[in-house]
Amino acid sequence: MHLDVLDLRTFYYRSTLGRSAQKAVRDQVRSMWPDAQGQTVVGFGFAVPLLRPYLGEARRVVGLMPAQQGVMSWPAGMRNVSALCEEISWPLQTGSVDKLVLMHGYETCDNPTALLEECWRVLGPGGKALFIVPNRAGLWARSDLTPFGYGRPYSLSQLEQQLKRHDFVPERHRAALFSPPSNKRFWLKSAQFLERTGQKFSSYYAGGVVMLEVRKQVLAPTNTGTAVPIRRPLRVLEGLKQPEVKPI
Image (tube, rainbow, N blue to C red):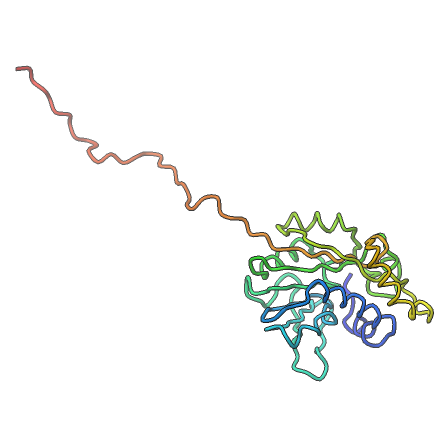
């Protein structure tokens, strides 16, 4: 189930709960990837709230939004870097991406296998991707108040197994959104404290989202050429008579 870009924009930029969630997830992304100097950073789904810290340092920042969701201009007041694309066909060159972030893109996609193949295609050798999905065991996946209540939630092991099958190597995982998905003032004021506490205990079972960093694995070729069997070898002297030896 795809969410509408207007609903996503309203949640993340016009609601207190959305701005709090945006900060909590973005802080974790920044702590995992503190530097993107001279790199190409791409977000898919609705990952643009997480890309702002890289605008001033990355060589290129692109926000891809699937056609089923819709697109909005981003960032506000600056040159637009967002683009509408097909879910499984991105307007990016093969191997051109250094860092890839997916949020509200994987759990809602129609064809997860084809999407992972497209992620693998655009990443350069050794490129890294960060998948941010609703935690199956968390409270946020059970609430319709936030975008994380839609789509397919995952446990960490489920997400790892799917990515391994597509030649991604899991490296690190984090959790975020330890506060309840509530608009009540008490929980909103306590959100930062709960995030700090949750990170200290590092129990991803309690977080609202699972964040899994993976690396593109490129296997070395095992054979430099293709062996072609010769069914009927060519004999140069085929057809000539054997010389006769006469006794002396």
